[in-house]
Image (cartoon, rainbow, N blue to C red):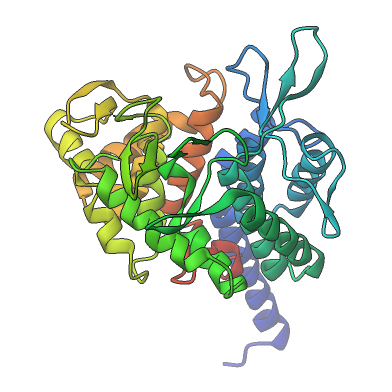
Length: 380
């Protein structure tokens, strides 16, 4: 029996159409679309509506740029970048003239809107540089790469210092974190994949040494397996932060997230995870992550909010902890629920939910060199 060429062609078209529909469904990211709808203005400003100042932070802009890249949404990426350039860097955010972005913008006491604190936040600067490097590679746009080099160069000049007995370390910002012989540090500001990617792009920079020193900091400051929100360096050693003490809570939860998303092929990945075993033990014992914990004695209090589960999902996946991952997935469903389905998730809930949910659902991963591998490169 002969089958006509037309029928063969029609069958192939139907199969291709079905495959295309499957790919579109696989690559559509409803939680991201909801985030853009609820938290990103048309001009590219990410708003934290849970704050009185209706603030925008450089962190929020940097995270949203990452999500736009994962979603292959270049239009939103450019809007976010444009708003950041105009409002956080006073239009001085180009490869030849670059001002580090102010970390906080919002409603002032007189009712006007503008920069509330001109100091920059180094983690956000790292993320924006990373986003630009990856956008340049993935979207084949040299202008992004050129801007990334300029930003990373300013990070090295203004936010990385050489600490006696240690070497390269990232200050949380250019101003206010070195007081006398004490240097205050934030462990959640140093995602290992970002440092690896910057080392790949700028092999003569301090990034590899910074990754090694960040691993030392996590190991020393987490004696019970819990990361602190803040730490300090004094007289050649890591010490408890003099301002915030040994508490681990809303900042520190990201340390577990970054450990979870790091490629297992990274030589520091296993040791980093092993240093953070306390959180796994807490969830195994109580069924939920503690809101706050003393990193020195392990005393825990409170129940962590939804955002903690978003951060912990990749951590449990990396540890092959099926029970913990199952609990995290259940709670993640509430983070991506549409409006009207319960309490509206606030900014921090949403972004940690996108990081964690996007990773465990396979929307992105990092390779051993820290480069972003989004699923749209293969599935879409």
